[in-house]
Length: 212
Image (cartoon, rainbow, N blue to C red; front, side, top):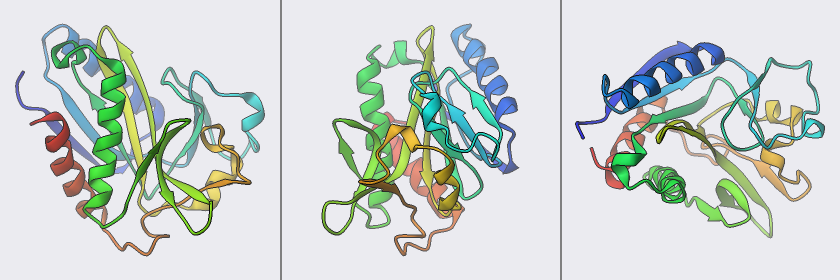
């Protein structure tokens, strides 16, 4: 495999446009016409529904545009201040193990957060990466939702840098119980990081997990 290409988009990329661009790249990777790519971007405010989304978890459907998508998972929010990382990788060339790929995505996030002295953790019964708070409370700081077509992955991860956390109140994020679990961000945890610094950490951690 050749080196993984990186694309970083300025401004807010419309969700539907991003999905179409990913699908084109996935087809090109499968055809051997393009190499693997990771795309870092932000979306305008929206809710996306994964293949396991429950209608009851969309609490305010009129608040933001809602997109049904083929990725795994339930409802999630995307918006300014959240870094989205779309990973278009040839999994057939990387061992053909989707469960391993998801674990690697988790490790990518965990190592990235560790660069800012934050301890992100997995939970076996909950998707995403979590931050343990005082007492029994835990807050989600990063989400994972992927799709694989002909052994090429797309969609990927999102990390809350400094989004408007109140926007998550329009959904039950990823089906989690809001009475026990919340959503947080690097900024809410007192970690003052720029998007450029987060991108640099994502790139360095990606190489540790997936190679160049």
